[in-house]
Amino acid sequence: MSRRNPLRRGTQGALTADELTARADALATALDTGADRLDPRAAGRAREVVDKVHERTALVGGHTVVALAGATGSGKSSLFNALAGADVATVGQRRPTTSTPTAAVWGSEPAGALLDWLSVGTRHQVPDPGDLEGLVLVDLPDFDSRESANREEARRVLELVDVFVWVTDPQKYADAVLHDDYVAVLREYGAVTLVVLNQVDRLPAGGQEQIAADLTRLLERDGLDEHEVVGTSTRSGAGLDDLRARLHDAVEHADAARHRLGADVRTAAGELLDSVGEQGAGVSDRARAELVDALARSAGVPTVVDAVARDFRMESWARTGWPFTRWVRAFRPAPLKRLRLDRDVAGSPDITEQDVRAVLGRSSIPPPAPAARAAVDLAARRIGSSAGEGLPTRWADAVADAARPSDADLADELDQAVLRTSLRGRKPAWWAVFSLLQIVLALAAVVGLVWLVVIALAGWLQLPDIPTADVGPFAMPFLLLVGGLLGGLLLAAIARWLAGIGARKRAATVDKRLRRAIGEVGDARVVEPVTQVLAEHERTRAGIERALGRTR
Image 1: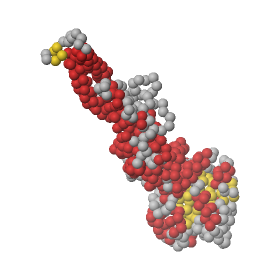
Image 2: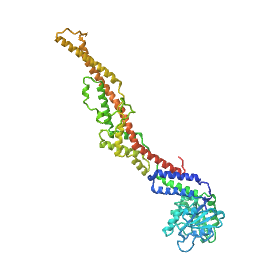
Image 3: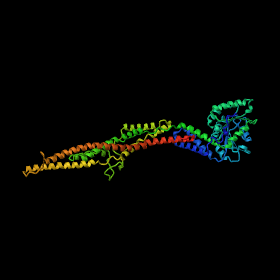
Image 4: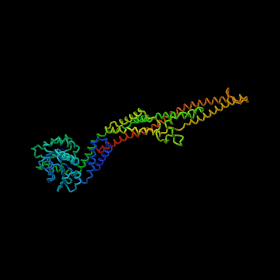
């Protein structure tokens, strides 16, 4: 009448106490990390399991709690009394008879704390434990009772016991409540499940085997691969010794509680698997580059870079341009000064990449246009959607939310990033060379002009001729004047060309610095929050798989 006795498996397949605690802790970590991104029902169930594991393992003693559960009229209370050897549970014709759980305890070891945890008030101490030392047998209210309180009490205790003994009878062995609401739901608990076909004395010859075979078929349909059907009768005493032997198997190895709790942890973790997915895609380099580009436009980096280039050219012309027209450029406003970005570190004539500006307040960079702000929002959304691809809805939404920075603070952070970035560099060596040459050429032109004026005045005043040195057909004063003027103009043109090249290089260098600073803001406000959510998802999944006994 049995396929296999799962209660004889002993420690084979049972978790050790340390492993059970480790898996429960891994499940708790997954719950804490996943938080509201997990399915609320599955998470609530898992939290109850974690609490139950800690509470049950904290109870001192080697008791095994076995629950007799059955429908109205199945005779489980009579069976309970027969096993206990006394009329402990009430038996009668009125239904329902059992409204509160009753416990019978075999052995001298105190079971008060355990029964308090089970909230079972009615208790009976079996005087002669025999080979059932450590057994705590609980008679439950009918799980199909018309009284909802009785049904709820039966469900409550079933959540806490170590071994299930489903008691049925020839009339209700195929009852849908037993199979659909209990056996099928608890099919993962075959190692701690026993099925009793009671009242077999009412069956004609051969009827017990026929019904037992049909009951076995139904149990297999429910998914209970490991099960045993024991036929009993409290009137004739048939099968009671077999049932006691099965209970002895459960008590002897003292691992039923760990079997049950391990199955609880696996079931709860399995229900949470749908709340997590595979590892998220992460933030790609392309998506990050798009974000930095959008943030750079929003921060006015193109405007700043253009101002840096123009400022470099103006300073180059001021230092290397034609000396006779340099003063005109002093009336032109400096591009960086107009943006309030012209402050240098005090005492540092040359600014390097490591130099920063001691600036308070904001710059005068124009605020971003609506299109620039929309580009930032779009780039952030793309990061959120791509990074959360393949994740369950709650996790994907969490990734998307993490990728959306606050507009109010973001503008200030971008502006401060620009203010903290060095916009200058070392002065080019050619500035000093060209400046010296311009001075020499200017002095030559002035000397030639003065010389010619003196010659002209001497002729007008009819003074002796001023001696001059001729170079071919040209006099030296003339050569000094013309050469100084033409040479200065030519040198200024070359300097302007070099200034254009230097301005482009300086602009490219500053653009890299600004984008690096802007990228740090983007990482802190968008990329890192997204990465953190993905890391939490990975830790949550790892905790669930650890609770399932899987290794990654």
